[in-house]
Length: 269
Image (cartoon, rainbow, N blue to C red; front, top):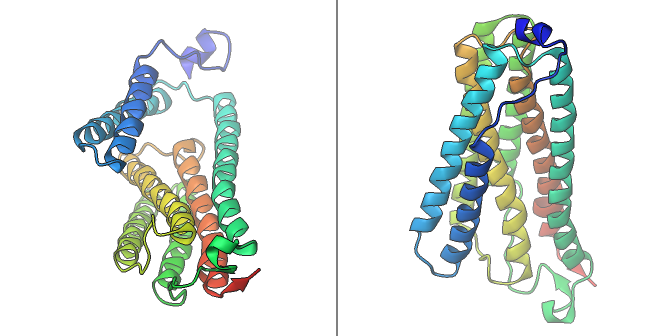
């Protein structure tokens, strides 16, 4: 904070960094390796890209945490800008999922002759929405409650309660991923078996990836809270993770209602 006053303004002028370059190159290798792997290529390029992305996340986050917690660069003005940035990021994520919902509902509401004029197509056995999907819905809704509990504890300076609530939230996030993995293992249709499988796995799979990412965010916040990084008036890192987690919750509710419940009933054109 003293540095911000010495420089005469409350903004953070970041130092030159190699992390954006490393992150961009790692993401390129990851995307290329994934595409090649999906076309029967070797997995080692995908693994290298994944390792590079994880290394970037660890190193870059560590630097940002140090700037915020120990160097005092994240002034109220900087935090306001971060809130705008996180809001815009979540808005872009909403548009990302709109594309998958659009693909699904376009096929469901206007089934073509190639699909037999009905959706789900003939021969597709859908999941029972009141079994594993309902369990995962309850898990995510509960995790939304516990992350709100954690935020309330941080705001009121209750570090121990915040740690407990974050730990429960992380465990619930991991439990959700396990249940979804079990569901996928017993899926009666495949990704390349037609329009239903493609749209189903793209929508629910990308949501599952977001749950994994959100769980990583919250695990980082858990360890940061245990180290005493979060203060009642200075905890945007955790607040951003909580926003992201609530976004994941809301998307799942739309997936559950639209794809699992409504999509289980055949719709004729």
